[in-house]
Length: 284
Ligand code: AMP
Picture (spheres, rainbow, N blue to C red):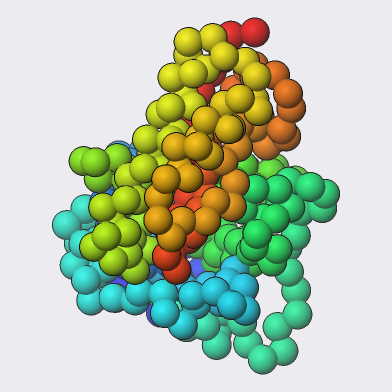
């Protein structure tokens, strides 16, 4: 596996690969890698000639009170894990090179898409995400980029950005990888105490409650959302940010469930923010 720190070297390496008619697959990450990330790399390896994985804890997507400083960083282990799945290039740029002192440009989607769900609680988050991913697309020059369904709103936002800005990149979403007890893998799970870790799979259980209600014919969104909140309300030290049923493409909330829908939850458990979701196709 090649290790590349310099933005110029990465861009040159990608240009050379494109000249050789290679398909570049790209997996952007913030490191502290787990099976969720590795599942994206494995799929990219199957579909592309050159797989680039970036590890960059992007300061601009963290709010002032959030966990940027505490976010787990373990490049040595990331490197080892990426070797096991045969990633071709690990790109880990320095923050000072990505955002030099005079850096002033950002990419932001207008309108409500980035203001809903997570965007409501993390107002600057998606601006940081679209900005860094646009920059990384310009450096890595992938034809295909792989993202996890776990961050459902991020996938919708990035598909919109790629389409609106004519990036010649296919944005691909892959399923959420879970622990045996249903907890979605996340680098932030490391923050959980033993007791919190024991309770955390309840997020997935609440999603399953909602899915079952819909599968059994419930079409009233408020009733489904209420059932999820009731399930979560028994957990100690848990604050619900949202437990919502929305349109899977627009993320709009309505009254009646139909079409491609997203059932999504965000909570603060102790001090850790956890998100999870399920997608579902509902016959009209
Ligand atoms: P992060 O390092 O948290 O920014 O995540 C990097 C990529 O891995 C994003 O596309 C995430 O959606 C994806 N990812 C994170 N956790 C999981 C998971 N449990 N299953 C699948 N993909 C994931």
